[in-house]
Image 1 (spheres, rainbow, N blue to C red):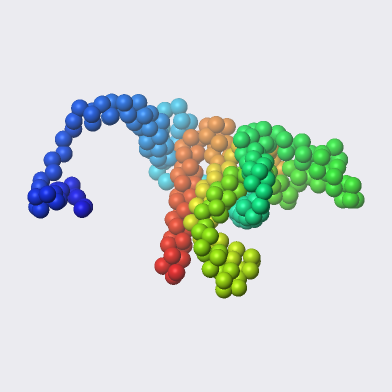
Image 2 (image 1 turned 90 degrees about the horizontal axis):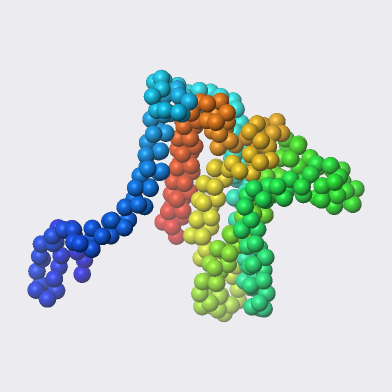
Length: 316
């Protein structure tokens, strides 16, 4: 039987009785032990959020909250700044390619691993593909700075040079740098996505495949009409989390392109733009304003993806 805050149904008496809420000794002990965590969340999460919102309407260096009230000037300045729009464009380009390629490749790899008959082979490939995920972003950026070295001394340029291809400026050519970052991010995140997809593939009921085989469906049709629709919630989860992560890209572009987003600003992202204004230009009010603009953009994208998935569910 269900209960409400106003009352509770008692089956043995067959009537509604008043339910009283009062704290017991165990409740107070629970809150006491949870107090350090609650205080930490308030001090390091909730308070900074409201302080940043308050600061975004001021012109301040961030050393204190008492700055000059400027209203929406910080937001207006950011929206009129060409560098902000360049950073937003770079963020979208790198994020879209990273999400789409990451989801597609990890799903294909998970499907191949799941179809292996050798059990030890599955565990081997799961460990191999997940291994880059335990490497820090800093180490990954340093590794790829050597692999993608722009001259013939770089490993990748040396290999393609064997086929008569001229060296590519992976991180020095503005037209190539963003896609080099995408390749680097794929190497780091592919293993995690593959493990998630593999867990989903192993949860698909075998009865669905057996029924499809009775109807004469082949491997491709079972993969397209059973596997992919059954794993749609995982696809949506990957899409949402990948979008959020892509919009917050900072570490790799900062290590590769510096605070200027070199080459030619092609690696300038929104978070790097925030960092420049906050800690290099001491314009904390502008930086917090851009932070909330980024928050609104991420919120809109997330809600859009969730509504799109809900609409798909209603159509089904």
